Length: 77
Length: 77
Length: 165
Length: 165
Image 1 (spheres, rainbow over the protein chains, first blue to last red):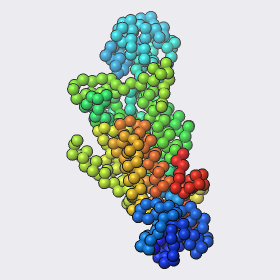
Image 2: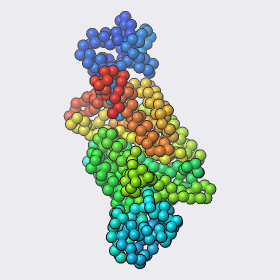
Image 3: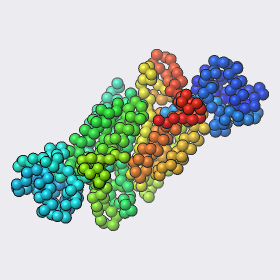
C-alpha cells in the first residue's frame, strides 16, 4: 500500500511512502506506525484515515493497491 | 410648534406644518391630529415622537419653538 | 501599522451611516482588514424582486436622516461595548434603490468569529426595528405601498419595545 | 434575468473550493447579487498578527486538496438542504498567506437574514472542524508550528465527532 501523511505527521514520517508489511486494516496500520516511531503515538491517536477522498473507519480492509491518507485534526480557517 | 411627519403619515398630513393650537404634550398632539383626521388614527397610535433627534415619551412638554417629529414604525433594511 | 492600513482605517472610520449614493460594499470591505481581526462578517440587505407575492420595480427609502445617523452610531457604540470588535460599521441607503442593490450594509470584525457574527446580527436587528428609516415599495403594476413595518408592538404592547428573534 | 446577472451567477457557480491564489473576496461578493435574495452574509477568516501571544509573520495552509474540495462542496450541499439559500459558496486559500489576507471566505444569500446567517455559520464551523486543511504558523522569531487543531475529540471521545458551539 501507499501511505500519505500531512501537516505535523511530516515531522515523523516521509510525506509519502510505500509499505509492504502485512497490514490488514487501518487500525493495524496505525499500530505499525506507532511501533516504527513511538514519538508519533500522540498525534497518530488523534488522526483519521481516508481512502478515495472519504474517511474510513479503523476496521477498513486495506488492499495492496490502496493509498491510505492519514488525516490529523483539521486546523483550517 | 412645528410638526414634521414621515412615510405613510404623508398620506394624511402635509410633510411639515405649523400648529398654533394650545397643545401641552405629545399625547395631546396625537389626539389633536386624530380629531383633525380620524382616518390616521390607526397609524398614529403606532407612532412615536421625537424632538432634537431623540425619542420623547407621550408626556413630553411641548414648547412653542419645538419641532415635533412623528415617527412611524421603522421599515428600514 | 502600514500607511495603506492607516488610510483604510481612516476611510472606514469616516463612513457616514446614511447615504444617498449606491453603497460601495466592495470598497467598505476592502477597508476592513485589520491585523488583529481573525473574523470579518458582512451583511448586505438587498432589494428583492418580490414582496408579499407582488413584483417589485424598485424601493425608495425615506429617513429622519440626522436622527437615523445618530441612532446607527449609537447602536454601533453599543455593539462595541458588548463585544470586543476591531471594526464595526453600518451604512443605510436612502432614496431610490433598484432590485439587487444593497439597501444596508453592516461590517463587523473581531479576533474570533462568534463575536463578529453576534455583533453583526445585533446591529442589523436594531437598525431594522428602531432606526427612523422607511421603505416604500413601488410595484410593477404601478401601485406603491409603505411596507414592511416593524410590528413588534403587537407583541410587546409598546411601540418602543422590540423583539429581535 | 439580465445577461450580467447570468454571468455573475456562472462566475459564482464555478468557484473552486480551494485556491492557491489570493481570494478575490470583492469579486465573489460582486457575483452574489440575486434578485430573490434579501440577505447576503459574508464571512472572511483572516490571518491575525498574533497567535497565543507570539507575533506571526505569515501562515501556510496545506490540504488533502481533492478531499477538501469534495468535503466543502458536500457541506455546502448540506447547508442548501437545511436552509432555503439562493447562493452558497466557500473558498479556502492554500499555501502561504500574509497577515490581513483572507484564508477562507463563505458567502450565503437567502430571502431572509436568519437563514443566511445560520447557513454561513454552519458552513464555516464545519469547514474548520472537519475539512482536511492544516495551518502552519510561522512566527517572527523564526520558529513555526502546526497549530490551532480542532480538539473536539477531547470532549466527544471520537475524532469523527465535533462540537460546533
